[in-house]
Image (cartoon, rainbow, N blue to C red; front, side, top):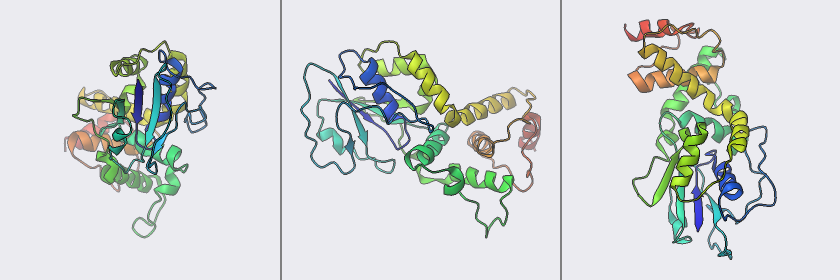
Length: 272
């Protein structure tokens, strides 16, 4: 069986491919083991079959029928084409997807991993409109990027039952990820050690949304929660973005130049 791992740029496709080829029953194995770079990617792992990309015109590879295979399908985050399926008519498709709440993860991995850049250089503060590089201005810029970027609504969960969709959120939990992958068909041995290494190398990407979820939970439960230690501007912007998703309200950036010191302040503002 061929499993096509279809993913957006920065969407952890290489990691899923690594899990399948290293831990899947009867899968063709790579010649090395999975390792993670400083940005958290696992691109150094050998591919057992050529990757299908946006420039692929004729995919000719002789698969050994004695093995299962994982094939990466990397068309770029801007493409939603499914034409690759014509090259793999009998394959099972695993599509990596994201939602409004996991979009901040892909937004950052897209910049750090796929573009090999930084948020500071890719989302600079407009000196004409803001005329400052203070934290509140960068926070507003990052929030607007999250809210308004056209890719926020890309790569949604498919309704096609022939496509197994795995949302980025599932990767944060080993059991959920293993269950989701096995639900697509392959039988997997235990890969928790590799997942733990991935988790440690990639927590910087999904940590902000876990923090934002916690803040929203505290607000909904009317709990006072200290936010003094939330000093990372991107994380602050993600929290603002989650507030906007939940209550359709944008925090006035000028009025709150200093980030909230606790959730009670946010609750008071929401109730105004």
